[in-house]
Structures are given as C-alpha cells and as structure tokens.
Length: 378
Image (cartoon, rainbow, N blue to C red):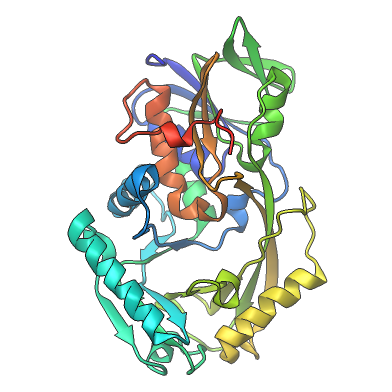
C-alpha cells in the first residue's frame, strides 16, 4: 500500500483517534468519522495499562514489548499536541492471590523477561506478604498476598480519546459525525459515504471496534470480530484520597480475572463481566451487577460502604483466536483494518493506532504482522 495523501479513519475510539492524530501530525489530510454508537469500548473501559506478557512469543511478544516501551513517550507527545491531560499516570500495580507460590513464579517470569527482553518499564518488582498489600490499596482484603510492579499505569480512556481527537484537529485533521458506509469499486475502497456525502480517500482505516464486521459485510468480506459485553461499576469511597492508589488484578482464574483501579476524588472502578452472547444489548443486568459486586467485595471488603455512582456498558471487539486484526485485506486495496483487541483495548489500542497509521502510509511494520491478518480464520 503506497503513501496516502488523504485518509479517512472510521471509528473514533482509542484506536481510530490515535491513528488520526498520528496521520495528521505527519501532514496527511485526515478525516475522523464517528458514528456515535451506544457502548463503545473506549468509553466504558477501566484503564489498567499493564502491557507486559512474559509468556508471549512471536507477534504478540513483539507487540507487548513495543507497547511497554512506547506508552510513556506516546502519552507525553499527545499531551503536548493536544494541550490537555491525556489521562495517563504511572501508579504501580498489585497482582493479588491467596497463593504466594503462584506470585513467586510470576515474579520469576517477570525477572527473566526483564533480562531477555529488555523490559525497562517494569519498575520495582516486590512480593508483598498477606496484609502488606492493603497498605497500598486500603480497602483490599488482608488475606491477599501480592506482587507489586511499579511501572503499571492507569488510563482514563475517555480523556485519552478526547485528547487524540483534539490533537488531530490541532495538527490539521477534521472530524465528521455520522455512520459511514464503505465505498468500493474495482477491488479498491475509494472512501466512505456519510449521510449522503461521499468522502473520497486514498486509504480508509477501519477502526470501528465491534461494529467493524457490519461495515465490511456489504463488500463480501467476513471479518471475524464481534461484541463481548462488559459491565463495569464505578463507586466512590467517602473521604478517601484515591489519586495514588495502584491498580489491582486477581491472578489467573481466581475471581474470574476481576480488577480494581482508582482515580482521583474517591472514585474506584470495579470490573468486569465478559458476556460473549449478549450481542449489542446495551443494558445493565441484575446478574452482571451481582457478579461484579461479589468479586469486588471479595477482593476489597472495604468497598461495602462505597457509594454506587454508575455502571458503564461497553462492547469489546473480540476475535475467535484472541489475536487482533491489523493490516490490509487481500483483494481489497485502499483499506487498513485495525480492531479486535478485546479486553486489552486501552492497554494496546494506542499502539494499534500508531501501527495502522504507518500501514496507511505504506511503512514497513516494526515486526511481522502476518498472525494478525484480518482475513485469517481461527
């Protein structure tokens, strides 16, 4: 795919907004199209930035390594271009378990990866005996031991997306609201149609999350991605200074991979359900609330008196094999697909936006993307 003078990015979540910003700051004429669907994953996502995957190899290993190296600089560049806070902060993270041996094994894996893969962003790694973790996250149960990793970040996905949209405008890009339809002829995507207006483009970046398959289907392309509903609860702890509280993740299958993280003002986020069969049903359910609250109060019984503020519902774009979709679709020129990060969208989405912008400009990728081919079948 050759260099593009004009690019239309479909989808203004964290992936699409980052791609548009990256293209605009390189002088490309870019239009960011936002449909305004209910339940975009970026708006609902909690925001734990922990991109290190010790056991990952191949493309996933290269992706996670690059994401870990890129995050601080990318956030700083966005803050400068947008002139506003992108919502990223390094607060450290606790991985909790009742099994100290499992945590010791995890610490060993991280130490090995630090040496072999150059993970300078891990920060301090420390095993905390039961009770010590609570000193860092005061509502946590005293029963849990924890592994502390100082380099873990916290992200407000809405702030990051809004900053990327603002930076796109500041660097010459434009924004269009409305549902897009892909326009193709002669085996090539020529642009999009929005509310009857055709926006011509040399390349279209399709970053519409869980809705991406619907947009490609009229062109005869079956994209293997669909929605997984997540219900995420926000509470407020009265009188608590939560600005510097770390993130909390449960290890392995314990409590179903639930997590906690805090933001300033006493806000604590509790998540999350993973509902693969809910489709695009944008509802808060009694069963979903119970699941999240049960896990939250098991991990952090100190939240029992917290005020319930809201429940956010989002549709994560998931693929059958758990790998994202990134790159061109054979036989359909002028298109870059960038979606399918599932529950890792806020962790890995900005890097996907950077890589999608590079693909739109015909730049060689920094690692082999074949396992992420959008036309593969699980």
